[in-house]
Length: 351
Ligand SMILES: *Cc1c(COP(=O)(O)O)cnc(C)c1O
Image (cartoon, rainbow, N blue to C red; front, side, top):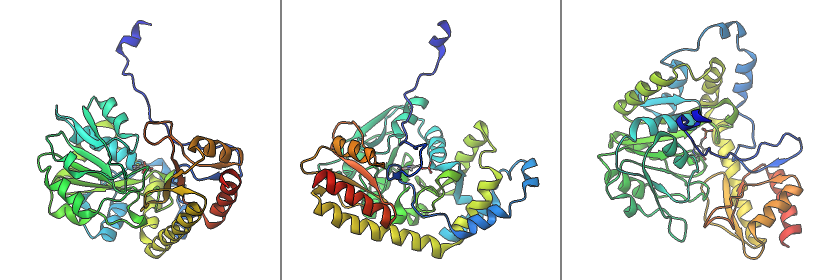
């Protein structure tokens, strides 16, 4: 068909499977196994449907921005909120990666980065992680059009110490450096305190993992007001009313209940530590994880086989048929009960 000559062709991102059937133990998309803070349910019940007639608050998103600003001790002009951090990251790619020079990111990382770069026509270069899946800061200290990496990295769970993050930000004052902290609440140290010192640093976080709100689609980023203004200019040029009225109201409750949030993260970290022991006993090796998942490889049984056999047992984990990582499984940390079922199944499969 002739019109196909004018089509923007893309190879889309592939998310983990969301099974239709019930009873699946879902350890494949890094969702939180615990429900959102109790206040979220109460706020949902109290939502005034009559208000749905009106467009959501725009552009300020006052209440949610103020809740976040209070929690992170920054100004509301240092926060940009989007429909999940995927939305925030996509707008950030569009806004800040305009150079002819390549944007740098790791070869093993969140598989959306190259998709956005491709769709927006941004040149990029992947920098290889070392044999221990660590990012080598020196690789990022060469001329580039911007830098992005998750910390902790996905799907490895490996955390980069803050000094190394700062080394990369400091060496790249002429471009924007984006640190994607989707998993930072599970034991890492956020780069947030560095935003005062570096006007080129953007720190991205999400409600999807540590705040149990993946389905509500709320993400945000923090940086100096100039960065935030540029993001808003692009956002308001593409699609302005994106966060819906319900998400804005419920998000506030997820931020306010700090005690619940901390307890939830603590439980997941505890279960992760237990999982490290259990997986080691069953012959798995893995880098130390600072996220809500473990990236594990078995000494003898191929990852693909374990993945398929677990799936037959209605336990879903993530496996990629990709260079360097095709003998690894990414296992999301579930409840203790879900993990016990996983250990039992692994005992059958791996001995
Ligand atoms: C999950 C994830 C995101 C995006 O999550 P949203 O649900 O869109 O907020 C971004 N980056 C990384 C590394 C992730 O794992």
